[in-house]
Amino acid sequence: MYSPNMNSVPEEAAVPGTVLIPMRFVWRHGGNSVFLCGSFTQWAQLVPMLPVENCDNVFQTVYGLLPGYHQYKFCVDGLWRYDESEHHVTCEYGIVNTLHLSTDDMDVDTETFRRVVRVTDGTLTEVVPSISETDLQASRQRISAFLTNHTVYELLPESGKVVALDVDLPVKQAFHILHEQGIPMAPLCDVRRGQFVGVLSAFDFILILRELGNNASNLTEEELETHTISAWKEGKAYLNRQNDCHGRAFPRRFIHAGPNDNLNDVALKILQNEVATVPIIYSSSEDGSFPQLLHLASLTGILKCICRYFRHSASSLPILQLPICSIPVGTWAPKIGESNRQPLAMLRPSASLRSALNLLVQARVSSIPIVDDNDSLLDIYCRSDITALAKDRAYTHINLDEMTVHQALQQLGQDLYSAYELRSQRCQMCLRSDSLHKVMERLANPGVRRLVIVEAGSKRVEGIVSLSDIFKFLFG
Image (cartoon, rainbow, N blue to C red):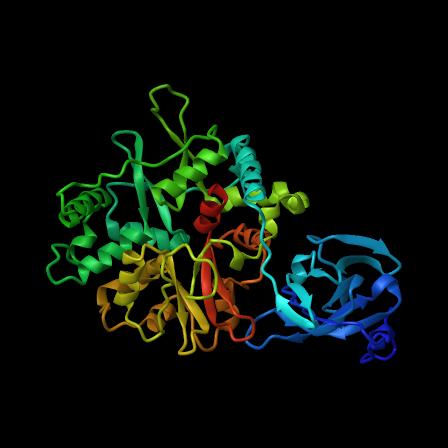
């Protein structure tokens, strides 16, 4: 299947006047070689791929390709594989992916090789792909039409569990439940009124810890033993009124949806109210009495529906083929990509936990990349990580100013410098050259709410893209 001379260059490459186009191969599924078939299968060769330093499961190689039609497949852990999401054909080598390079515009029509190169007077310059405003709006309208024609019922699992909390439950006990159940939030039920009235989230725990650390706070550690959720919510509304220069309170109404609501409306409701999850409530009574909690809908489930529906027709939506660095999605470091104009928040491991909590609240972000002195990614601190302090009542004997982010991550069983495999499950990454479609596929996985955009090899943080960023861009 390949040339006996593993280091040989195709014979046609020696022809005077031909131009070799250097390409960079990046494969995230593990592997150690790529099999290339030359133009019209006149030559074939096995090209070794080397792992990228400090970047788990990313392999690359640089190889000269002549303009023309090429085929390729990957050797992963001793097995020949191909990328099912890319164009593929069946030939004498089995099922292979295809790649076409022209001499005028070197347009690589596969996400695996997402580079567009133009040859001018023998000089190679990278061209960032773009689409017209007409194609952009057409893609958005197709996605919006799909979401409008599908309901929340499609998000409901065949089986599962949902956790709700009584508003008369002590706050301390409530956060222990969140930690033990491994959930970042839970709907609140007022049993006496027979209604769901709100949610309790990790963000509430952050605000409580900040209050405990405030010398002027009226909330003490002892009061947490008896302080109920409903009392905290009332106190929270009072705090908001204090912080408002007009003296207005912010009694947030309970954000929820029904099983018959369409996915477009639910996604907009999540974005407009800046919430992560919307409880799905059903009641057979006209007055809404005896409500049933069916599910907790999130952008993850809605995005999964989009990806599943357009998986085999992604090429018909030009918007999905664009690399994320070319569109206004996510938050980027200066001069890296198009930003949503929100500054990129990062912290060192030595930063205090208070600074991390303040940044989560003030910057209104759900996570913060933790980086070394070279801005290379070490870990990520998420808003939901705060519930780990409920374990063994750790919150009762910590000082937010003295505890570092590194120490807080150790409460999660994380070690910035040794538990790399475990951290890689938390630090989901992507590259700036990844297409919007590939990023959406990654974000549609359960438990993945954001991707840290890193430079291959150095893992230098270039940006971060979240679920809400994707939907804000899709909705325009």
